[in-house]
Image (cartoon, rainbow, N blue to C red; front, side):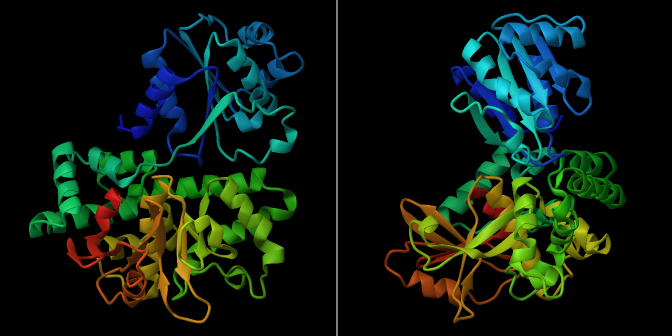
Length: 432
């Protein structure tokens, strides 16, 4: 079984919760159901799972009276042999977006308090208008992601001691021994083409075959497109699909800002904005907003109309470019603007899996831009991303500001520090 950080989160929730259910959000195929199932079976005497897409007939149990005793009675009609033992039972509602009234029932399970409840779903938010009563104050929402790079390292057999040693180099600005640095860069390129979808990672570990990896990724991409066809509002189905399929072209430009004209000649925000928001709400894509001026707090200076779009998993992005892109990434032979866009999405992958909001900086009247802006200690930390090496004039300009204490240059190199500028190799974005 792949080691996942989210298991520790579930353990913490079990020990600290008070009259609350847990709602786990996230895109499809990231391993939500598997990790919750393993957690439930290992930590409760009684584990009961209801998947509302696999067993749509159970939805009728949530019609009418939502009192816990009545729900137990009706659920037992569909789940033969189950027992509800107070304090020892986990009830897991999977694909809860397919049963809005089950979402409404979370309030009553939480108020009752006899049983632990975890709900999970993809595309949460699309059926909100159908939920009769939101369980405000009775559910803890958390987002789960596909494997991050550290979890990928664990899957590859890289031990905690190695990662801790690399973290020390990061903290102390000490260059990493050449052979180790090159090995880590090689593993990072593997991560870029494999990504973090559990089924894909398992396929890679079992076969060491990139063809099998690509087949699994294309199945997931097809599932995403099928979700668009199934769940998106009728008027948005083709537009959402076209927006999603345009991402490789968006990132292949010198300026990776999302442009509706790339989706369709003459495309406009009026036509496509709702479809794009649908993709974001489904956790399939992530927005990165422009912030001008680049100062704390970033949220106060966001330009909502200027943004970039990144995929929720770097491996799926590479798959969208086609199979041949895998060799170009693994062998580091790729050139041109598209390489810069891919490495932007790589660092976005690192940040979003830490639940860090994505922001960048670019003035309208200048070519100056910095790919990411973070916040730490009430100050802005700029990050410039290079696919290889190169000058960082935009980062250098920001570092001249007194209120900015440090910034990062992320590139295909080693660790170093000159003045306020800290240089790290791409894989050390793990420690940001």
